[in-house]
Image (tube, rainbow, N blue to C red; front, side, top):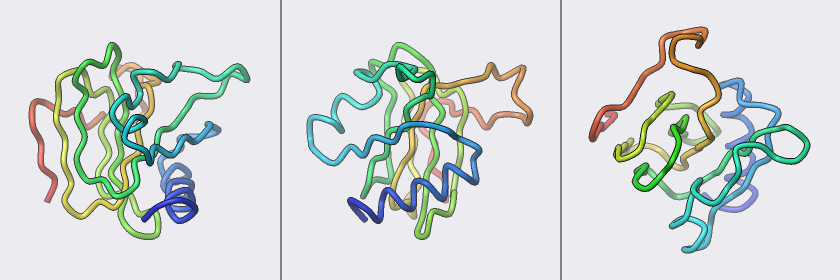
Length: 127
């Protein structure tokens, strides 16, 4: 899944997650995937956040991140398979059935979230 298909699936998943409005960045090249959210500011000039989309991806890490991230693994047609909030640096996550991954800078504290966050600790594999 790449390009417009990834964009469409990301929009569907973002709607289901309530992650909007936001600017979507599709990370297809090696450099964009390597740097990830590390080089993206928390907010765009218009005040909206950014969501980074990793097409053809089923595992991510938060090494070298200076802030917590919200991460969602997405399957075909934009179905959310797993969702983690406030993933701190130096964590590894995987979901073998995912076709793309969404990342954004964490927006709410775990205490103030409307539902209990599913926090990742160490390496976590979602069946």
